[in-house]
Length: 154
Image 1 (cartoon, rainbow, N blue to C red):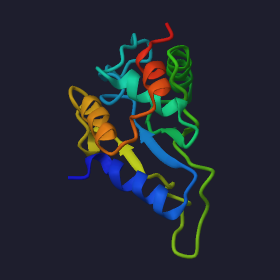
Image 2: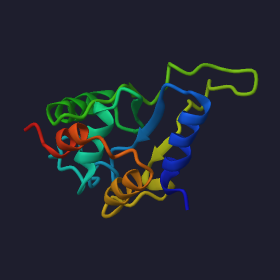
Image 3: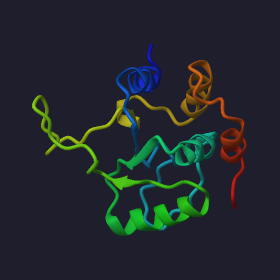
């Protein structure tokens, strides 16, 4: 199994000379246990903070929030995440990748990796699985990023 397409995405990046890997991340039941209330207190899923800070620190990764949350709720969540060292680049879109001769991204934006509970993500253990997979494929190997990712800025 290619865990959330991690191995293939980073292999294609190397082989095809791409600058960026695009990762979509849902909020409810992926980053946080979903309460679906605009006033919910936030608590990241186990290991989610480490992976998300690692991705935020990587200049070759763009994080796309993939959520049905309203903009007002996204702004509140995003502010909290930024205070905890996690920064999304885009909300429900990828303006960096336009249409090609073979593909239209008008209704489905481009991404390499999707972390979404409706696509099989299980927040109780998949964040640790991601760390282990990133170690296996040699992407979780920069000591300065590991230390920063494991440190909660709050």
